[in-house]
Image 1 (tube, one colour):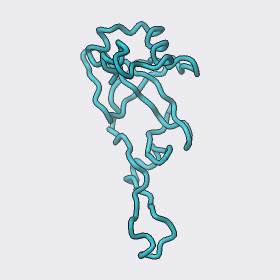
Image 2: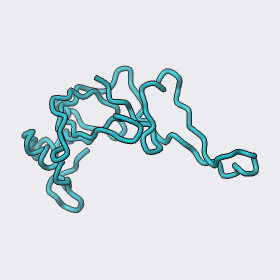
Image 3: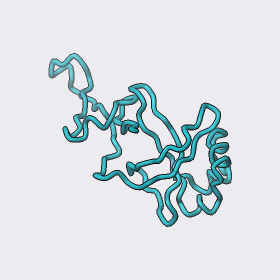
Length: 142
């Protein structure tokens, strides 16, 4: 969730691309204060993701790690991060992802060729994720 401090540029603040996207979408300080502006992303490929900002429906607040459905009206570009409406949580729910690998401290003693192994996902959800920079991230879907 984007905080009022970020909105007001106190401390870290919104980066220039985020600020341009928010301003062009007409998001107000009241929207931010209500907890409606959230950061969202999905996996486009194994080495990259699509970032956006989502605007939750009035009366809803964001919770970190929630997988949501987003209506993409604006894809944004390299100079401006898009702001798109959040339609609601995924149904059935998806886990937010997580680390795709775990360390094996005694890998040499066990005769393994590597000091890490893949963390498996439940079979029913495996096709919904990509590994992006060592973490499971929900795939972008049309």
